[in-house]
Length: 223
Image (cartoon, rainbow, N blue to C red):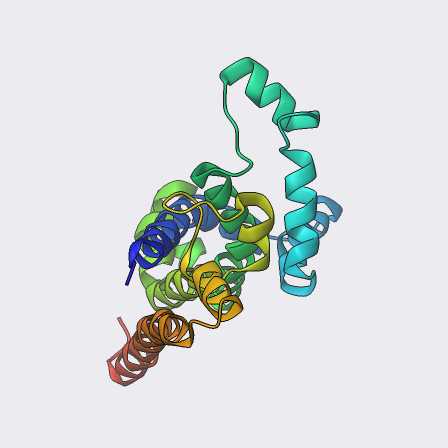
């Protein structure tokens, strides 16, 4: 039984989650403050992966980063970077596809915080950056954890997007969801069941941990 697709999937999910945490926290904070046409457009673009068929998103990423045209050709000629049919391409596709799962919960949590928290911090001479890191983030850590775990779990189950931009290269882009599909195609239901069961157990454990943590936080006194 080749478990390489499982380890590759976990690696992809972990990298995607970390990068989206770094990108998502400041972006969610910016989107939570006020409304403008630019913010509405950006938020709509971020949300599109929730409603677009994964194969459509994967197709446009494939076209955009093909080494024979557009951005992909420029990256290949200038930096010798090829995103299509590579692990780096999987990471990029996963970041775009899972972004709404990171941005949405954090943005909503920030918007629900009372304005008095920020105003009191500014009154005490704290900068906007210090207020965000030391005051706002500690008050939404449950939402940040939820967003991180949802992002990780969502990346585990990607299929259409990763297949379109990464293909099916063993040890490079053949993640667990593709391994399940391959196993079913050749009627190796035993292997498909093992891959599926491992993914199910990991995802179930992560979702349960979110519910347990949120229940604990709800019972704990307000800080």
